[in-house]
Length: 255
Image (cartoon, rainbow, N blue to C red; front, side, top):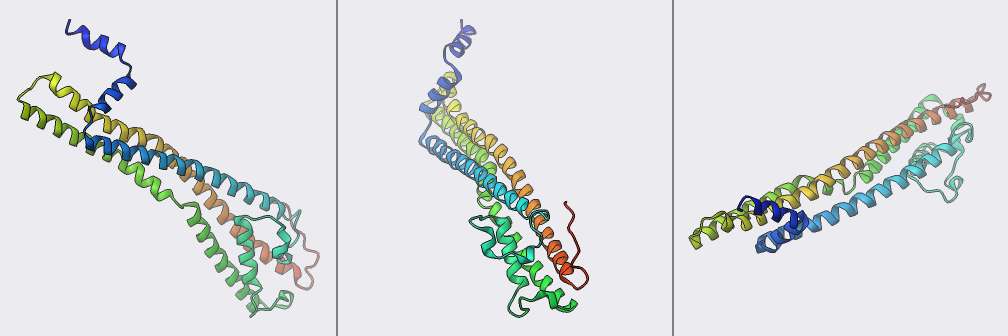
């Protein structure tokens, strides 16, 4: 009879019911830790979903502008102004505007057609520096809040383990004070203690999946914006060469 009872109890009471019974048996520390893990889970998924939508929107706007700036559609980047973009706002636009402002600094003037090679080299140095700063700022923006996900992913299992160790310690302490020593006396306390470890893993496992997916998107966007920065510098150089006497017939080839 003793061998059958645990099996029938497990069949009658599903895992969720067992977890609820264990939760009811938890001490105040266990409830606090479960509460912390619950808040961490809500915070984690809020960041994951909001960050995923943000990165998707950024990439969509960036690719739309890159398509408009293709050599087949835009013959010269140096002829663009802030008003050329209409209502479009994207990170690629900010990169390009920063580069244009650096290229047309007051010290250099606006008539780049008459630049000698030394003046042109200074223009390009300032433009490339502006592009590097802009890329660094955008990369930092892409990675915003990722550190919080990393902290939750790494700390949630240990928070759950802390609750388990504390619960087991309480269970053995209660048995010692009561003078009992049977499995019936020990099981409820240990079950409640293990629940916090389960909670920690339930929070950490989905979080680490979401974190790595977001990290992959961030890396992809970073590579794309670095490539676009390099493309801007190349286009500036080609635009300047085209403006030189004898090169007016230079044509871009589609990439």
